[in-house]
Image 1 (cartoon, rainbow, N blue to C red):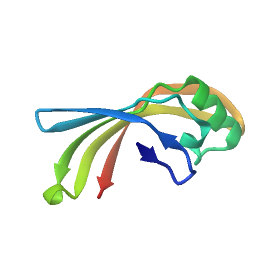
Image 2: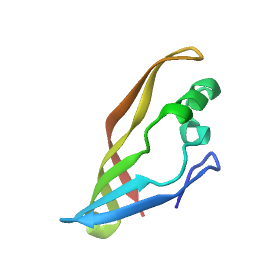
Image 3: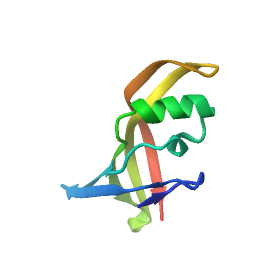
Image 4: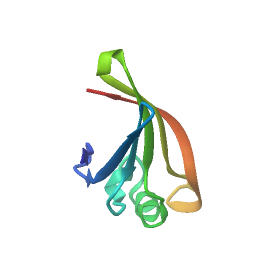
Length: 96
């Protein structure tokens, strides 16, 4: 389970293969997952986004997981969502 600063919760599933932790969203999208975006854009993205995924490896003696996050993103103008980008890849670090 992941807990967002917005108060949203996301159910997660995972598997481990060859020292890589694969994590994926296992709950419906919620506009609060995208709380950093304007409300109208977050609502639209929650309706159309693919589930989020992560591919992580262990670092710093196990206190950090680093790798990539694969998620949908938007190119937005004001409160309109002209384009949803389905698989945007970003570097990410999880710290214990």
